[in-house]
Each structure stands twice: as C-alpha cells, then as structure tokens.
View 1 (cartoon, rainbow, N blue to C red):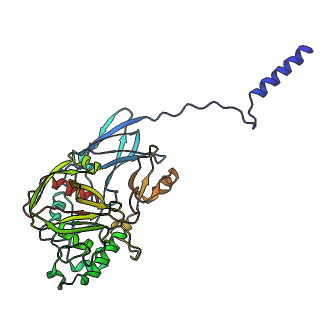
View 2: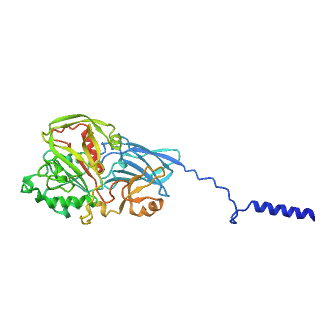
Length: 395
C-alpha cells in the first residue's frame, strides 16, 4: 500500500509541473510554413514597344496582401522573386493612377519564367491634354512613346468642365500670350488660374515648362518678375524670372536618386536656345523637390503638396470613376511604396496596415512638374529627352 501511495504522489507531481497556471497545456511551436518561390522576368516598354521604361514598379500581391516588388532598370529589365502559383503581375509608373499594366502569370517553384514583351507594355490609363506652344512640343514626345493627348485651346482652360475630363494637362512654353487672352491684363486670367488650382487640388496633374511658368505664378506671356500678378501658386513658394541667356549648361546633376536610377545617368548637358528663359530665383524646399540642378540652381522641380481650401470638390479625369484606389503599402522594413489597386482589394490591404493615399505628398493633390528646359524647336535635346519622357510617365 505504501508503495502505491508514493506512486500516486509522484504521478500527481508530474502532472502539476506539466500544466500552466491558466489551465492551458503547453503546446510546442509548429514548424513554420516555408514559402516556395520562383522568379518572373521581363522588359517594360512604352506603348510603342521599343522605348524601354526605367524605374517602373513591378509587383505581385499574395493571398495575405503581402507585396513582392522590384523596379525595372534603365533598360527596362526586371527580375522579381515571388511565391509560386497563379498571380497578377502589376507594372506601374508614378503612383499607378495614370500608367499601369496588369497581366496574369504563373510562377513556378525554383524556376524563372519570362513574360512576353507584348504583355509588359505600359498602358495609358490617363486622359491627357496639352495646350500648343510656340517653343515646346511635349505632345511630340507623347506621340513618339505611343500615347495620345488631346489639344486644348487657351479658351478651353476657362471651362472647368472641359479640363476636369483630363487627368494630366501639359502647358507648353509659349502657349500663353496677349494674342490668346485678348488683353494685356493678367487679371483677366482669373478663371484660368482658379480652374487650374481646382484641377490640381482634386488630383489632376500639370506639366509646365519655361515661359508657361505664368500659369503657375503669374505674368502675361511669361514671368518677368517675382510677385507677378496672377497665378495660383503663392509667390513665397516659387519665384522665376525670364533672365536666362542662350547657352549650354554642362554637367548638370540629376539630384533625384530614383530619377537617376531610372535614366541610367546622373549628369547631362542642357542647351537653352532662347535668349530669355525662366530662371528659378527662389523656391520653398518644403513644397518642391529638386530633380535636376546646376550648381544648386534648380532646373526641374516637382511637388505633390498643393492644396486649395477654397476649391470645390469635383471629379477629375478617369481616376475618379475607374474603381481604382491609390494606397501606401507599409512594408515590414519601412520601405513603403505607393501603388494603385482595385477598390475591391482595399479591405484586405487595410487589415494588413496599409493606408489610403500616396506615401508622400498630399493625398488629394495631383503633381506639378516645372522644367526650365523643354524639347525646343531645334530638336536636338540630347539627354533631356529621356528626362521629359520620365516626366510624362510619372505625372
């Protein structure tokens, strides 16, 4: 009996030390699932099928809304490692609202598949328009890439319903003058300035070059002084004067790292063939990013921070009604990326911790690019051409 009693006590002790205080049994950790991956590669090109696109974001999304991404190099080539299985390959430039492509792919374990070139052309989603200029023809570069833009007149800019149909508007150098306004008074353009402000505040994007600075900060055919009458961007944010002379700027720096990586070069020469081009005198560095410069003189700037509290809320372009949403995907390493996805996928991304709107800039604002240079009448613009092509695809 005594031995049985000791045996019962021993068993009781063993049971006690193998139980948790909250009454739950200790269960060993399960071996984590190993994700099997393969590679998908290809080459991103413009719609013309020949111009390689550098800096394009290439990604897939798994069943748990985890994003696997990479970027195309300056020759358009990409190689992405992602989980095996059927998925959709997304290709985007900018934030993906204006140019993007989706193509189904099947990724195979430990294999590399190559996506056909026909499936990796960057599609135009945006409706684009331009105002014809005297010294600049950005529409020529748009056409050469295989994309389309509609010509607007200066008078069209005075109709908000007209410009709100578009996602991007290109304002060419020399597109604005007394002959178009019918008067020399800049105040007569109040409707144009108000409409452009409303357009950008509601997500539309603008390209403005050289003398077209008058659309942004005021002036008549161009901007001759700081604090010129008119414009819709506050004078303390940007000042330009048409005091540049005909010359070539050598060894200009591409100071924006993503831009330089997409281009494959970080220096270039820029020829200014006009005798009075707009030089940037000062700018607010919290509002503008400098993309190209010469000895700290900005030559190309960009912002996504524009706001107008007085602007009415109006739907702009295709992006307002195409069931797509732009979000900031939060990665585990903090390298967050802006992507545009189908609205139906938002709840899963939200649960993952993503947020609506781009990762930087104002969530409602479109972008504004201002360049002091352009594809001028002489036609020989050298390395400025791929920079302007980048602008077109990243507005």
